[in-house]
Each structure stands twice: as structure tokens, then as C-alpha cells.
Image: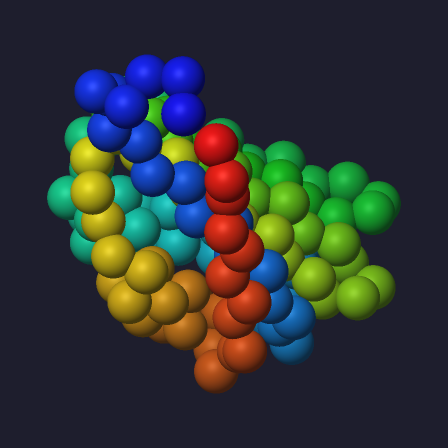
Length: 112
């Protein structure tokens, strides 16, 4: 680790949803809920865009931020959260299920 004195936490998550991948309001609401649930401080966003292949969304927090990328035909959603403030995977899972339904979430592990 380059600088162990700086706290940082990153959590990648992927899942398949049956929800409408092109629904911009769904991503907007998810990002607001995630920000509030993790007690982060919103600086910018949500920014949401959708095109032929899928959708992407971002939110910048004082403590870092979150991004989402989704692919339409497959219903695959990838969420990547980075923070300099601790949070729990359990809260992230609850928020994902509130907005994307009963999905099986695969969490990744990041080695630094």
C-alpha cells in the first residue's frame, strides 16, 4: 500500500436486473439513496446518461464517489464505490435491492 495513513475503501459490485436499464430516474434515485444511506456528502450529481448499449451514472461525494455502468440487453449493472470514509457492504446491498429488486449481487475485492 502506497500510503497506509490515508483511509480508503473501494467496493465493486455486479448484478443482473430485470428492471429497465434505460430508466434514468432509477439511477438518480439509487444514487441519492446510496449517498444518504452511507451518510456521504453530495458535491455533484447525480449525472445520468443512456444510449444504445446501456446507461451510466455518477455522483461525486466529499468523501469520494460512485459510478454505475449498465448494459441493456443483458441487464448487467456494475457499481463501483470509492470512499475515504468507512461504510458497510450490508448497507450497499440493502440500497441495491431497494432499487433493482431481489438480485444476486457479486462483490469484488480490490487489492492495493
